[in-house]
Image (cartoon, rainbow, N blue to C red; front, side, top):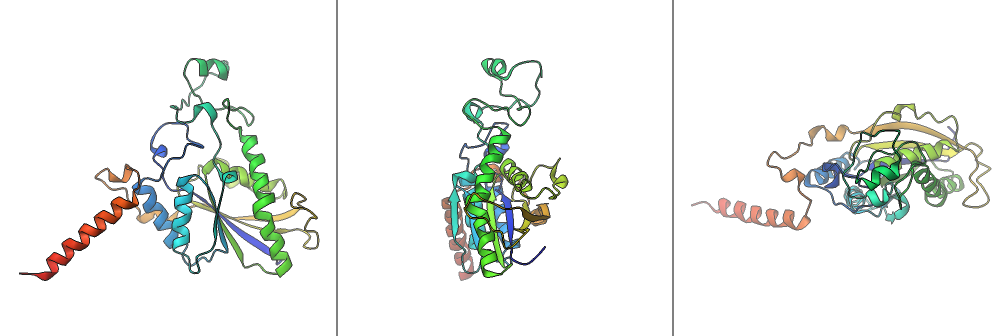
Length: 278
């Protein structure tokens, strides 16, 4: 790939309280668990030497908390911007409802909903009422490329650099649809490695993107010429090897920074008392 390219590292958020429940959770704004925050901190530490130019995040708190944690370990504190365009698939009336994976393909979705069942969706165009289909998510992802990410590639061409590196903190379904959207601009992009994999919490995926013709950058933000993209990493999660869930069950609880500060305060007082000795 020629010079003037941008590296994009997509990160799935840490474990949320809804991840531990068998419910449909897309736009529902669940927070991280304590274990999820530990995952985010391990990720941030592992990426501390990877200098990000900017961090973009879904505005849902599980993603935003993960993004803030990544930013906190970066030298120079790169700008962090949130956008609802980076949200997970919207499950409409099924949000927060128990998910039913088994489904009779001969029964209409509307009939199942009337019976109080919220089954897995079939195909790329099926959706719950008031929600999004996979195709809808991919269309939203194409807008993210056009409005948020491709401008970095244009900037790289203008500056003649390949040093721009952008972190994008989002959600499992959205990230995979963003990759599929990218493949619309580069038909040679090989995504087969991700066909049957779910992204783990805080796993990261990386693509390097440039214009096939660096002299043709498009006249308008929506005018995106053919791209040259390479998937270099997928579902990377080595940083999780040392992250163990607390046996006491506190790992499943919602993360609360105030509780952490209180524990730290009393722990510090206890250590100070011990250091005085008899």
